[in-house]
Length: 117
Image 1 (tube, rainbow, N blue to C red):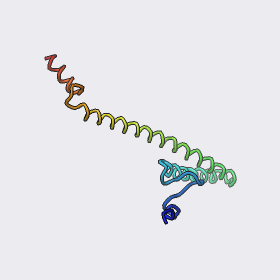
Image 2: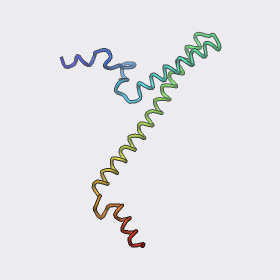
Image 3: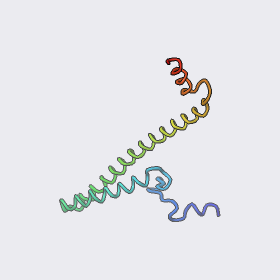
């Protein structure tokens, strides 16, 4: 059937039922860095204080902070990259469109340079 491939294990992983980690940009890295931060902070707090419950609280808090922090950092960089790509694509399209015409910026520069000399 056509819908069977959607529920196969290993194809897609939804965190909390709504965040598709495979298809959402930055989701996988955010979850991994959050888990690593949680492990380091929880274990470090436990080794320092020997308080299990408080260490679990620190681990959960550091997971949330690390995951959200990296999520916003990654999404910000992704947005900047997309803006740069859009500007580059527009510049390349204008270059192809105006090349050799009277609107060509390089042609105007060479014309000015000829009149200056």
